[in-house]
Image 1 (tube, rainbow, N blue to C red):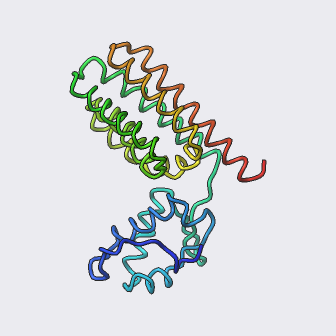
Image 2: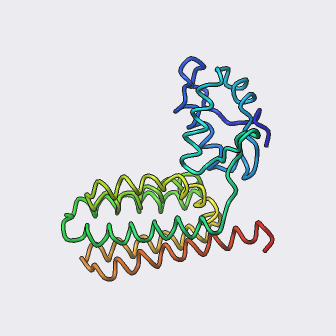
Amino acid sequence: MAISQLKIRTDLSAVKLMSEEIADVLRENIISGNLNPGEKVNEYQVAKLLNISRPPIREAFRLLAAEGLITLVPRKGAFVSELSIREVKEIYEMKSMMESFAVRSAIPVIGEKEVSGLDSILKLMEEIIKKNNFKKIQSLNIEFHRKIIEMSKNKKLIYFYESIIMPIRKYQRLGLSAPSSWKTSFKEHGDIVEAIRSRNIELAEKLTREHTMRATLRVIGRLKRQKGD
């Protein structure tokens, strides 16, 4: 799509738009698929559209490059990063290891309050699935997995998990593209919560790994179909 068609929040004034806000605008357009993989993100056009000087835009580009959402090519500019099967495998392997470790660490120390928090997210998921709200399903899915990480109370784990959230969101759109996958994912989430509730560490860890494995295969399958493989 053209840069001129970027979707921006109307409450962001030109004066307040700085690097973080610009990065937020571009980030959401990339993750939603409004900006396509390989598409050039023209610095001049973004500056003109948002009515802001170019230095904050360059800093926003650097932030997004650090997240793996755009690629900076010397003398050519910024491009939305291409989707890669290799990257999918690497990111989801990290996700699986972190979440499995979080489950193992959390179960011995959490109380009913934490489990109820997961129940609340599941209840919202069930309602949103009925409403067919794809965007909300994506955000609740991230919230569910983030909650499991946070239950470990391991600050370093939480920090490193946050570093892969954006790449996960980028690919999650492919893995949850079909309504049938929402229901499958919802059921798997419920099974994980029940294993956590029963304090069955081995089962919870196993279900968490299998859940991520199936998500990985869905993303890779969709990516292959897009590429015509």
